[in-house]
Length: 243
Ligand code: ADP
Image (cartoon, rainbow, N blue to C red; front, side, top):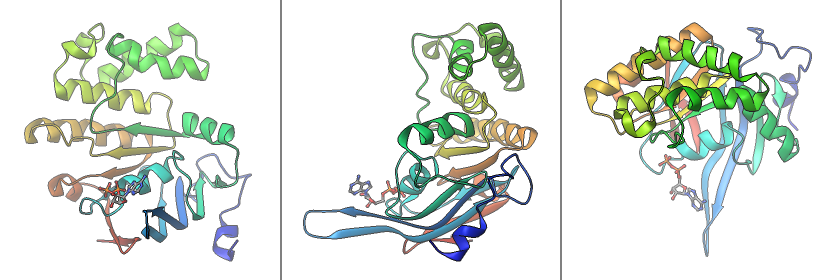
C-alpha cells in the first residue's frame, strides 16, 4: 500500500470532519476481461469528494462512468487502489461490512427510479429507514418531511404508477437521502426527463444536497446541469481529470 493511501487512515476521525473527505478514490484500477484482451477502464483514478460538495462526472458513453460509480458505491471491487468512505478504507472489508457501509453511508439515484411499485411514495422513503432500525412512526415522520421538502406531500399515498416521471424521480431522491448518507451517487438522475422537469428535479436535488451536507457525485450528459455544480470532472484514459 502506498504512502498516499496510508494518509487517509484516520479511523478516529470518521464523523464528518472537514479534514477527511466524505469519499476518496486512490489509484483505482478496473479492467474487464474480454475473450482475447483486457479492457482497461480505470487505470489509477483519484478523486476526493468533500461534505456538501456537488461534482458532475461528464464523459462520453463507454468512458467508465458507471464503473466508477459502482466502485465508489461499493457495489463492485476495484482490481487495484482503495476506496475510503469517511476515511475508512473499504477494500479489504468483508462483503457484510461493505454492505453495512453502503446501507448507512451511501445513497444512490438511478436514471430509472427503481421505486417499489406496490408501495406508496411515503412507504418507499420510509422503508430503508426501517431496515436501518427506526420505528415505523419515526421513519414515516422523516419520510413526510422529505416529501414536503420535495413539494410532494399531497402525493404521499400515491403509488409510483400514479406519479409523473419527475415526481417519481423526486421520490427516488428523497429515498436515497432518507438515511442521511455521507455520499450520494447518481447515474444520469434526470436522464429520462424532459428538460424543464430535469431542471426542476435537479434544483430539488441540489437543495437537498446543500441542506444535508452530503457529498454528491452525479454522472450526467446534461452540460447545463453540470455547469451548476461545484466541480466538473471527466474520465480520460481511465483517469479522473478536472474540467
Ligand atoms: P459509461 O457509464 O461511461 O457509459 P461503463 O462504465 O458502463 O461506461 O463501461 C465502460 C466500458 O466497460 C464499456 O466499454 C463497457 O462496454 C465495458 N464494460 C462495462 N461493464 C463490463 C463488464 N461487466 N464486462 C465487460 N465489459 C464491461
